Length: 110
Image 1 (cartoon, one colour):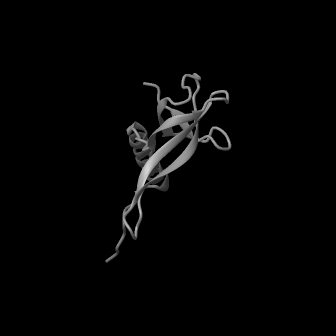
Image 2: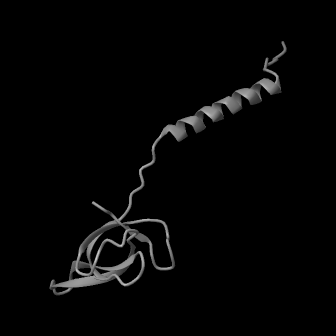
């Protein structure tokens, strides 16, 4: 008794494997990726730079021990390509790729 396994030539196997990989890549390209970005609302503090505004975002925090609420604020440099916003305007902005050393945010115009 001889146990002989019949197998396809090596060239046939590789071509089938390549076709399977191509199908997987095509499926991945058809899928639409949704990027989750942070979104903030704040008040413009300064608009003296060209296409850049400084925005203050306030949030209420609570002290861990005593429970007292207080306002913590942070300033962000935001890209304003149209130079539309002035001091004391309310602005919505989202995260984006780095535009400069400090700018990683851009304005949402609505």
